[in-house]
Length: 220
Image 1: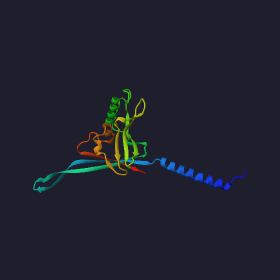
Image 2: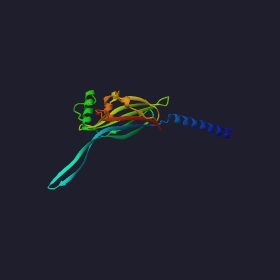
Image 3: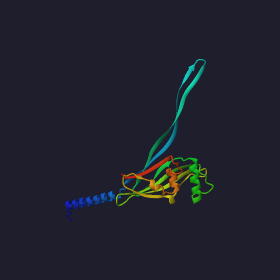
Image 4: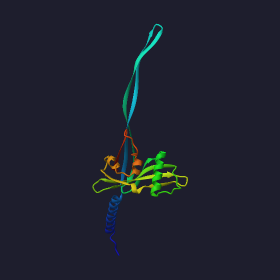
């Protein structure tokens, strides 16, 4: 029985090329892309400072010392701006954690405890000693090239009984942003859940302090 070695080699080579091309095509289609999500924060605060300026002289006369002069008070208004940014990388269609604060003030600890207790996330015997805040970020690209973001407020707590973490799913916020562009959360913030507003720093701000938040999502 004679076997045509040349034809067999060519057939196997062609088959290998087809299989390799198929694998490359499938691998390329299944390779997930990273999406960089950045949260920009800018806080502006107006400070009123009163400056006191004095001018005068001392007139020495025979036998007496008579001071003379005047004091002028000037009001000065200074605007202080603080900017910061935090980011996380998310696989397209996946989730990642965006840490906001590793430890919050006691007033916020009490707020998150009372909210979690009222909704039923924790039992009364659980007492929060320290609380850290973050956002669970879900990012997915859309057919038109934009990116859908879902921001779910999350806290991690330390307690004598046990540590734990809570995702407040009922407080999640969804927004759609253009790829690579900054989008202000100012309008979105008014409809955000109070828990999310607390985490992002919108709570109890006086009229002299304004906070502006922007978010961007960029496909890597």
